Structure formats: C-alpha cells, structure tokens
Length: 363
Ligand code: IPM
Ligand code: MN
Image (cartoon, rainbow, N blue to C red; front, side):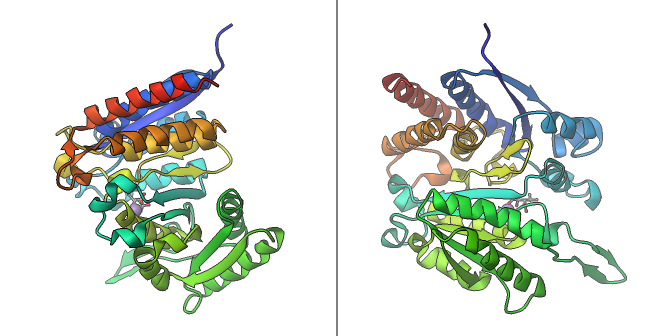
C-alpha cells in the first residue's frame, strides 16, 4: 500500500526565492517522510517570473493549482526588473491576489530570540533575551483591499475597512494561539483616531468573553512599535490589522537581526500558504549567499499547522538552533568570528542535523 500523499505547490518566485526554497523543499521531503506521507510537489512560476512567462503575476491556473493543494510554499516576489510594469500587474499584486483567493486571513509571524545570534541583533542582548512573540496579522482585508481606492487628479486614496466578522475570525486564531503559549494576547489598533479601529477593539473585547483563560490587553500601534524594540520579552501574542501587522513584523525582525530568519504561515479554511517574510533581495540574487532559515522555519510551521505535527516542527527548529549553536552563519547574520557559509551549505547542515534528530528520536 502506498503512503497517503501530501500535495504541495512550490512557488519559487523571484530574486533569492528559488535559492531559499530549494533547501526548504528538501527539509519538507524529510518531514513528510517522517510523517509517513508521500510528497508530491508541483512547481509554478509566480510574481515577476510569471509576468515574464505568462504575462501576469498570478495566472488563474497557478491560483487554481494552489487552491487544490494542502499547502503552498512561496519564496519571494518582485524586483527592479518589474518596477515599471503597470501597478495592476506588479508582482506584489500577484501575492495579494493569491492570499485573497486562498482566503488565508490569519498570517502568523513568530519572531524569537536566538541566543547564538544575540550579536547580530541591533538591540541590547539583555532586552531581547527570552523574547518570543507571535504576531497574528490580518491578511486579506483592511487598507490593502478596501474600496474605494485609486489615484486621479493629484489625489491618491485607499480605504481601511473591516467588518465585525473579519475581525472576529482573525482574533479567534490569536486567542487560540495564546492559549497554547503564555496565555497573553495584545490587540494592537489605532482606536484613538480611526473608527474602523474602534470597531476592532470592541469586537476583540467582546470575543474575549469566550476566552476567560487568555489575558487580553490593548495597545495603540505607535506605542507597540516602541515596545517591540524596547521590551520585546514582555510580549506573547499580538493581533493586529493588515498594514500595522506588516510594519510591526518587520520591526520584530530586529530581534534576530535579520529578516532572513523569520518564517510565516497564512491560514484560512483551505490551502495554507507558507513563506519567509523577507523579500526577493535582488542585490544578492543568484549569489548563493541568501539565508534559507526563514524558508526552512516556514516548513516547520507547515509541519505544525498543515500536518498537525508540532513535534516535527520542533525537530526542524531544533536542527536550526543546533547549526546556529555550531557557529554556522549566512552573511546576513554573521557578526565577527562565526564561519560564514552559503545558502546550500546552511541548508545541508540543517538537513543533516534534522535527519540525526529524527533518527535518534523515532516516533
Ligand atoms: C509582506 C510583504 C508584502 C506585504 C508585499 C510584498 C505585498 O511586505 O509579506 O510582508 O506588504 O504584505
Ligand atoms: Mn512586509
């Protein structure tokens, strides 16, 4: 009898996307094997690569393939090559269309302190020690998608709009996550200025009645930005809207010193989307020096959320921790004495560790 199959769509995209996805896919193959699953990976062009090959960043047949899979693994999209294409078909628009079509409304972006990388962070080690925050960003609504939008007659405009249901469903994901962590949820808004954020705050507060075990607090986004880089260890789960979550999650990158370390999972009711939060880094594309750990840690999240195998997710994280403890560094996280390796070497080292961890701990 053949093993049940895990169907995954791979979208390497642009710039360093293909480079970081290659080792991540090898890690995924090892994880699937450990879970007793056969792995079927289908690759499609996406973003700028799809503009070049098919004339648009998110062709319908690519979206359909994604929707039909259990999970989608994406590298990165965009680059200067497509800066002059019309706004409506920019690579970034393709990513927004994919998120929207998949209905992945909850974007989970964890950022934690890696002890061996304390030197790579611009923040003082004693402040980031022990920091472990999960940002839950609403991903398919808010000002990214609100109507009306446009630019005409020297006026540009977008609309920040949320419905009660949109707020509730993402807040629910955040409350559930807080339950499995330290039981603290911070809802971040701008309720002192924006009506839409008053609805946000009220709705999250109402939902909290269903989660008496989770301690809910509210904070304005400007103040939260300060807190993230001042006292990050005090944060547990943060839930916020699309634009604020975009900004705060980059700021959270300061905890590790490099966006290259940060993974993400985007969850809805169907196929889930996993992607490192870094961009396509055109300046280093093709050089083989990109950090694959954000992509690899996204596979750890796939194990946790799509496969419901948090143990395998933890095994991948442990493999990453181990290679960092061994002193391996890609350029972006190198500080001083550590040995600097390329994308492939870093990926191979993690894979080797992962296999040893899984072998020594048969499940
Ligand atoms: C991210 C990116 C995207 C976003 C861009 C590329 C559309 O910055 O995933 O954080 O703004 O959501
Ligand atoms: Mn961003």
